[in-house]
Length: 151
Image 1 (tube, rainbow, N blue to C red):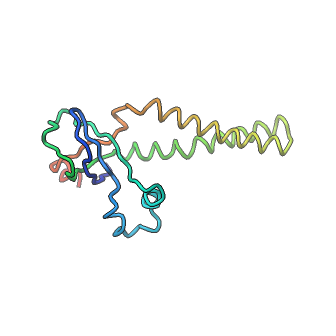
Image 2 (cartoon, rainbow, N blue to C red):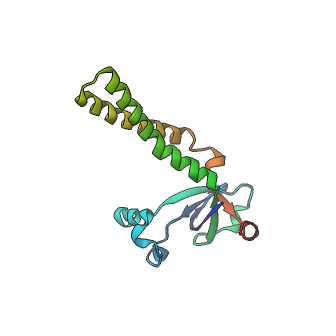
Image 3 (cartoon, rainbow, N blue to C red):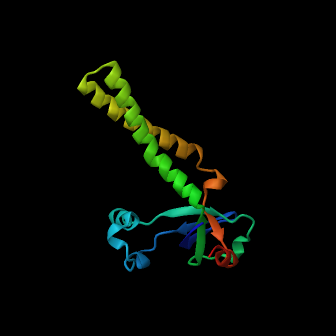
């Protein structure tokens, strides 16, 4: 399980809103120049917020500013990365091959490649929208006892 530290920014009855990228720690990270999250946070001027289910825990145990541990299964990250990067590439290649062997024109083949890439991106977007509430794909709160067991 991949662990991430976050800061509670809002408490609801059934979940927490958590800030996952903290500006104070981004400046001291060794991977600062190669980190996409740090660069994105600098460009957009804000950090990422996500909602985390309390999963039966009492909301009174948390307050704004608390540092918490979030866990995401490695399989979710690996499968999601493969899907997000591989599907548009696959649709681009398939559309290119179909256009090349059916039409043969370089211009139409290039246009088909662009259409295939956009179609793959649209499929990724649709899948993300369809699975946004799937509890198996969401980050979970990790207690101190669980952190010791995971390490």
